[in-house]
Amino acid sequence: MRVGYFQFDPVFGEVATNLDVVTARLEQAEADLMVLPELFATGYQFVSQDEVLRLAEAVPDGPTTSRLAEIAARRGMTIVAGLPERAGTRCFNSAVVVGPKGFIGCYRKTHLFFEETLFFSPGDTGFQVWDIGLAKIGVMICFDWYYPEAARTLALLGAEIIAHPSNLVLPNCPDSMVTRCLENRVFSVTANRIGSEARGGKDRLTFIGLSEVVSPRGRILHRAPRETEDLTIVEIDPGEARDKALNTYNDLLRDRRPALYDA
Picture (cartoon, rainbow, N blue to C red):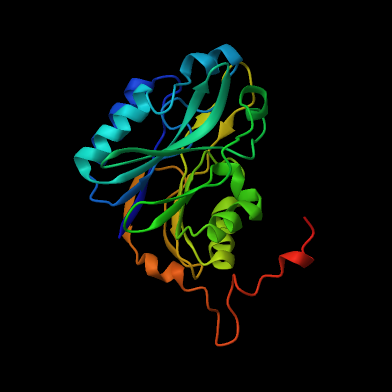
């Protein structure tokens, strides 16, 4: 199975332009699963609720999801991508999953970071896993990585690959995803962005790049540079994530003792 990410520098508010950039690059990608960054088509640093409402879209009928579904159908791939979702009067920091046959599902970010709490409602979908044929995939968005329960829940639900759209500004995530994969025996594909934003007089946010694909044994199969656009695809065997045995006596998930864990 061929999995990958596209790391780039979106222009804030220029949804059509950003979609054109992504379309042009994915037309060159021979992949089964591609992951795009969090809020990949809008940019990240919102300055008002009105701005969020203006840029947020319905799912699955909004233009960004529709465009991604067209690419997925044409290229025969599954795409996971972050976008602001509008549902009535509420907005969510969401990620859509689309495949060759159309819309598959939507995940709403559980753990909001920093000023996201001003503009988005906490996600209410819970963690979900979808069978895309070659593998079972789960989704978490950016700051969700900070909570071990997120990746563990996806592993318990059967995820073999965690798709991780991100706009990372903290330095710790790339190395921490090695631990998340190791402790759950899953693959992960983190798609971060590059560049920076300083809007409305706010402090500048600088995104750290370093998108990566990590194996169930905690091996970094590829890590992107910090400041350079990067489209990378690597070949994996999802079956490696189905074997949770650590040795003859220990199975990673079977040996859990949740009755003794502090909730």
